[in-house]
Every structure is written in structure tokens, then in C-alpha cells.
Image 1 (cartoon, one colour):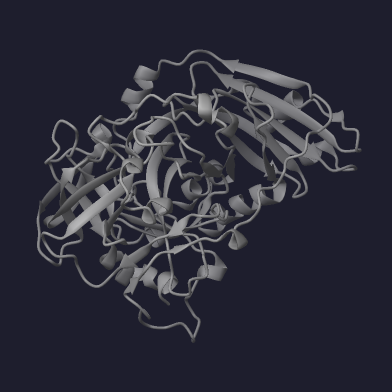
Image 2 (cartoon, rainbow, N blue to C red; image 1 turned 120 degrees about the vertical axis):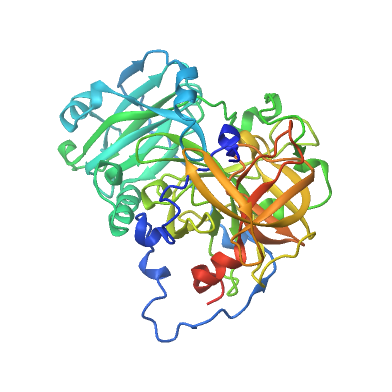
Length: 493
């Protein structure tokens, strides 16, 4: 049995090997404007099997909304959760899929709607609106996401999130956006408290303040929310604000044999298609993987996003997705991040399958200008010996690259927890076996794309490569297989 990349990297399949398609078996779904079924003009076969990359121009990207100050300092109920033993937390996550970065913590003071309403101290604003706030800190955390269970929230409400360390770096989300995310969960057939939970963005600190702002004339009792838990991020993801970038020294998280993507003149186009992604599972555990934007034959800049099924296989998790773009070093081996951008709006899960460990989504937020929508090649399988490379975020670190070749084909199955067993296959098998000549992969690399000549040909499932075993094999789900099974209808329909 080969280890995962979460013992070195997480490899549990969320739905089990027998589930061929998570849309039916794992609660995945599609929005109506992306559902090609029933349309008589829909092609019955792909219009293309190979496509090149394109770059998102500024004219197609949405301008960042400016968050205006409230004009007053709100009183807030302040809740502090005691120090957490992160060693036990990390050990508890070893049997989970993907790279675990956080654990849930109960919040007794806001566990119900009644308690949360009591904690929200409403006060008037100068413009006639009303607002209230609650602050939660978890001792020892590097990040924190509040799990807000929504029983009722006006569309016109504004939710503002920030930390004590960065009170001016406010993330603002409308009540309508929150309600739309939760509606997505229900449309996908998911139910229960997890489907009714909106997870606040991680603002890069172990504390967060949630402000709720209501339009003039809106009754406070229209807000029926509870915050029964938070996800305590114990992994230091080191996401400084733009103003701090020049002064922040970031300790390297990945093994020293990983190669800085800013130390090569290669991959200049495709590296901008790669995002570091974090998300929260239904049980409140937070994870980190890597994903890649992919182009479609209409070339309309639709933000289709490819990652691993063992990372995201349900709409509930997709709704929590945060992405970090251009997250790489400011210069070769500087260990300091350059200017990057984040998106917090989640995604629509279009298709997920355990057969190739692939997950295909559409981001709800437009990525920043300058990102690449990567090309792909679905013309059968790549040949043994073909040169390949990967771009990924091992251990959540700045963007790295690996170079190697196709070693053969494998048949892979989950052995439970983070274990996976791969046996030699043939050209019909669903996975490539890859060996690296430069660099490796680690936890956090899961879901990242395998490239050949600038085009995606696979997504990382797992394997045994590491700085201690650089020649060990990794396994990638074949893009041509998942393309032909379903996703061509979005990419080449």
C-alpha cells in the first residue's frame, strides 16, 4: 500500500471507489445555466479534444468593490476560546481526505439563534441603518472561519468580517450572496445544518469580528442566525495584507527539495492558472488543496476550475471555497510572497468522480485580471516517457514546480483513511504513474494539474514522492478520461 500525501498528502475518496459520479452519489450538482441536459441543440460529442490557454483581460475582470467605513465603532460581544492542543488536532486529521489545516470548535455563547440574537447589540448608524457585531477569538489559531447557520437573513443585509490585527481590511458580503450559496447547497440535494451554514472568509488571524448591517427600517429580529462553531486554522498559511508584503518574511513550509516556480523562465503562462485553495467540510474541518482554471472552446472566460474529488466532492464544501491567485515568491527563493489576490465566493460543483479522482467546478467570483485559463489535451492518453511537469502548492507554500515523465499507467483504489493502493495498469487505466527528475509533491499539492506542452493532461491523486524519496511514483487521474465521461459538455460542447 502506498501512502497518501497527507500522511504525506490526503487521499481518501469522499464517496468510495464504487461511486463513478458524485453528482448522483455524493450530492454534487449543477446550476441551471450550466446544465446541458435536455437542450436539443446541445452537441452529442465534443467539438474539440485539444485547446490552448488564454489570459483573462482586465476588461473581463470585475473591479474590486470599495468597502466603506461605518462611521462608528460598534460595541461587540467578545468571545475567547481557550488554547487548543494543535498536536492532538493534527493527529486527529491523519485519517481525513486532503491536507487538513483546521478543526472545529464549539462556541457555547452563540450556539442557538436566541443566544446569538442576545449577543448582537444593535445600535444606529449615522445614515439610518442599524448594525451589531460579535467577535470570536480562538487562542493559538493562525486563522478562523465562523460557521454561521442561517435561519433567516435579509438579502439587503451586509456582513462585514475583519480581524483585530487588520481592522481596515474588511471583507464584505451581501445577505443575497449568502442566501444564494445556501440555495445552491439545497438545489444540489444537500440538507441538514451543514447545508444551511455559511462559513465566513478566513481573514488571516486567529480572531474575527462579524458585523451585521441592516437597511433603515429593517427589524433586527429578521436576522435569525447562530454560530455554533468555528473552524480553528492551526496551519500557518501566512497571508499578509498587501501593505505588509515588503516586510513579511515567510518561513518555508514545504520540503527544501521543492522548486520555486519563480526560479525558472518556463511555465510563465500556465502558472497563472493555478490557485491555492482552502475549504471547509460539512463537519467543520478545514482543508487545503491546489486547483487550476481551465479554458473552454467558446473562449468566453467562464471560470471553470479543476481539482481532485478527494478535495471537494459535495456542493456544501464547494460553497466554502476560498482561492489565492498569484501566490508565489516575489523573487527566486525569496520566501516572501509577491502581490496576490483572494476570492471568497465559493463555487458551483458541476461534476465529481472517484474513478479518476476529479472534481470540476465553476467559480462564483470572477478571478483577478491576468489569470490564465489553461489549455488541455484530451486526445487519448499521453505516452510512456512523455515529458511532464506540475505546478502546485505543497504544504500550502508558495507556488512550486516539478519536472518528470510518464512512467506508465496504474489502477488505484482507496484502502481507507489516507491510504491508497496502486497496481500496474495499461493504456486503458484511469491513472498515470509519474516519476520526477526535479522536485516532488506534498500535502496541499493534491488536485493540482499535470501539464504536457502547456496543456492539462491530469490531476494529482496521490503517491509516495517526497524529499526523502524523490524517485518514488505519484499518480494522476487522466484528464482525457474525465473529459470524455462528462466534462466535455462544458469545455467543448
